[in-house]
Structure formats: structure tokens, C-alpha cells
Image 1 (cartoon, one colour):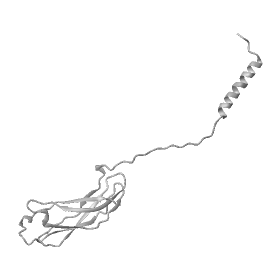
Image 2 (tube, helix red, strand yellow):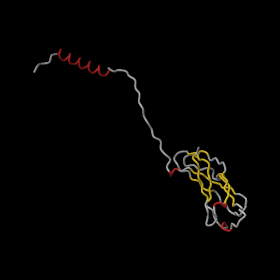
Image 3 (cartoon, helix red, strand yellow):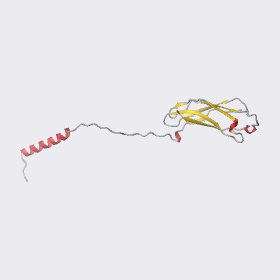
Image 4 (tube, one colour):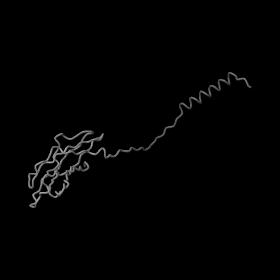
Length: 156
């Protein structure tokens, strides 16, 4: 084996230093571009706005005065949602056909409900309901409790 001289050691150290220094400082410039993506969630059925009647509607008879249908909207979602117009329908009860009832929807405007929020506790009038006077026997509508269904349009 050959003996290392001072000169050989110095040349080797200089070469190592230049290699290390060259790698540490050597670079090229360039530009770049790229793309990415993100996915939004979807509304789950558990996040649907809840619509509940406020108060009771009583004392109907053929031709009686129309009564306000008042509803409170609640947003169970973890995000804000806009409530569209609410449509009210009445279902037949026993022999009292739905056609005996006159429901007139109003242009309600609940607006945007924050996450977990409800509309005003007093609710909002979304329609009026009246037992029509059909000029025929409506005994089938005595002592019935019609079921009202509330549907909110998408909050456009």
C-alpha cells in the first residue's frame, strides 16, 4: 500500500471541498405549473331543513274564515342553508276528501338559516287554510284533524 503524502492529502481534501461546495451551490432556475382539485360535500337527508307547525288550527266549519298556517324552520346541518318557499298540502282524513279544504300558499321568505339555527320562535305564515263550503253535505268533515304536509323548495 502506498503512503499518502501531504500533497496527496491536500489535493484530496481540496477536491472533496470543491465537490461538496459545488453540490451545495449548483442549481438551475426553472418555472413550474400544476393542478389540484377539491371535492365539496353533498347534502345528506339528515341535513334537511325541518319544518314544524307553530300553534293549532281549530274551529273549522264549511265556509269558516281562513286561518294562518304558521311554521318554524330549523337547520340541523353544520352549515348555513337557504330555505325556499314552503308549500302546504292537506291529506284526506277518513271520508273527508282533501278537496274540501282550500289551502293558499303565501310567498314566505325564511331566508338563510345558520348552522343549527331556527327561524323566529313565533314562526312565519306560509299559507292559509279554510274548510270550503261546497254547498253539499260535508258531515264527513266533522271532528276530523286534517294532516298538513310542508315541503320547502330548494333555496333559490
